[in-house]
Image 1 (spheres, rainbow, N blue to C red):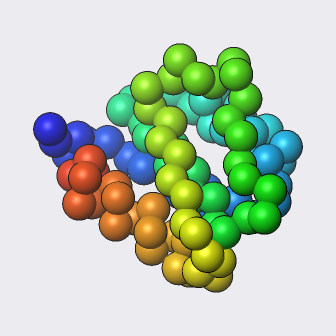
Image 2 (image 1 turned 120 degrees about the horizontal axis):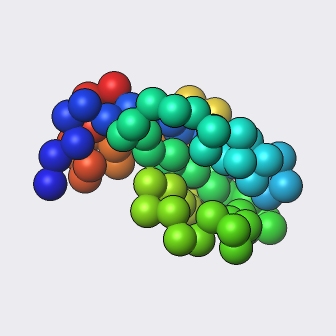
Length: 90
């Protein structure tokens, strides 16, 4: 599967479920398609929970890191997934 024209937006979450879900809600108003939202839960003691209203959205991917990789490490995990698994170019 290739999504060459897709854009991936990486959100790094650390104990910010409410804020991250608000950000997702805002990003879903973007009119560009195809757009992917990749949430990286960066070793949060309280795991990220995606709002039920977004569960049917196929363009939202949630990844979990067992440890806090730092902001850049969390982004790198999301970028690696976007490139290696989804083959997203941007």
